[in-house]
Image (cartoon, rainbow over all chains, first blue to last red; front, side):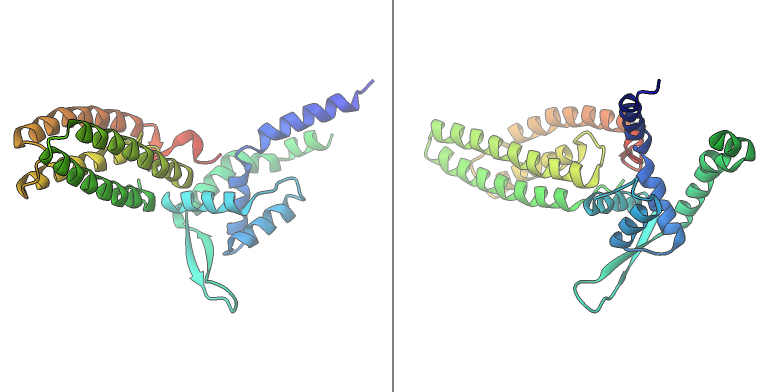
Length: 121
Length: 137
């Protein structure tokens, strides 16, 4: 008999481990779609991951600053009618190539028919 | 690696002020032949420098995640202390003899060099100053 509580505990433990490092993937995906400010990235991540991923704006700022120093992302300041200028981030050439290779090696294999069949079996 | 950060700049300014005040206070104490005053100045200076480095260094690590094993802060402290040691000697403050400053510069310089070797060794584990296993966390 399936013990639902045990499965939930195991699922939470697995997800905690699985989600480590996933924020990077979602940030890249958000910026692949279009240039975005931190608020837009946060909204994209939460919406597209159907609420399975959440992130604090502070954490996003810290990550984006690091990526900027690593020349993975760049930003341009856009003037807005209210408040200070907003930073709109985009992937650099390095960032785009990095994401392309990462997706090719780690994500696209999940689109193979044999794997999809196993996932939906 | 982004070596020059805002926090390092703030530390440099703070350390510069502390070192100038310390050297001046030491100059006065030595002028008055006050051993206790000189010792007190040194202890307070050491404590404040340690706290300043700790405060700005911790913030620097939290904000910029630069993995430099504290070398940048050590280097700035060395330049300030030794540099001001020579400057105060040449402007006539009674802090340290030229020989004393030079001996400190050489012995501390050896320590700094060893720290630099560690820094280079640690840099091999990083990409542009960021620890490899922390970049995509």
